[in-house]
Length: 305
Image: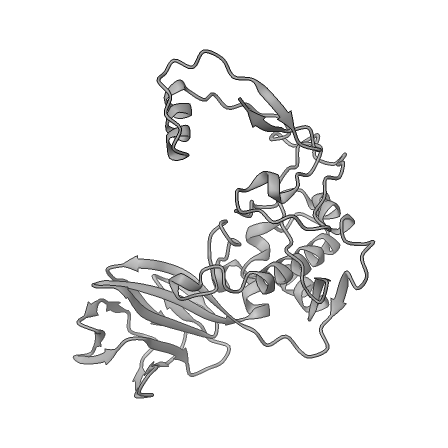
């Protein structure tokens, strides 16, 4: 599954329209949402540059041992055995970096990230860097990446609710990698503090604690740049797509003017053969013919024989 970057504000209507008839479709959580998101920002890398906007400290997660660091100094972080070496001192991984000033950020390869950064060793001699960030600080790093700044505040507020709901529903998507979500369009595009804007931050504050709910849990809210005139049901879009009663095919009149409303792709015989081989089906090119045997409710091809 993937989440595509949203570039048309009115496409929010497609997501919200499929929920408005359901009980408690938009709800404010009874308790403040204090979920800490763990966002993978760098995976399996040999080294990275570390700094901060102010003084900060490093802390071994297991022992609690701390080391104070100056934000004016840029450090090259590389693995050394089961740890990392900073100023001739080896700290055992995992290590958490936290700015002394709560409003300051930790810099990874020059990019600032709020709250805390955790470094762990996933494979020998390779590091994974994770931003441990409060939920709404995470959403602040998403909105300009997923919707931009050219749309009305109401559209930004809708995106904030959708992105918050999606994050809650998919907290364990990358649990095997040691974090919640990645920072790419596989989950949601996340740019850290550099991606924030006063306008989108305002939309997040206006929708504080609001999520989309179905059957007492956060709804799985998919969003996209263009639906081609009709949305598709998830079980037809992805091999692991789960049918949800609120994610159904609906008509859309807003995507027609997009340059991606219609497109074409050329698939070679070799590509067809390779795709079938992955499903344990062997054919020898050239392909003689293909039959479009079944269509989904949206009118898209569902079965080729």
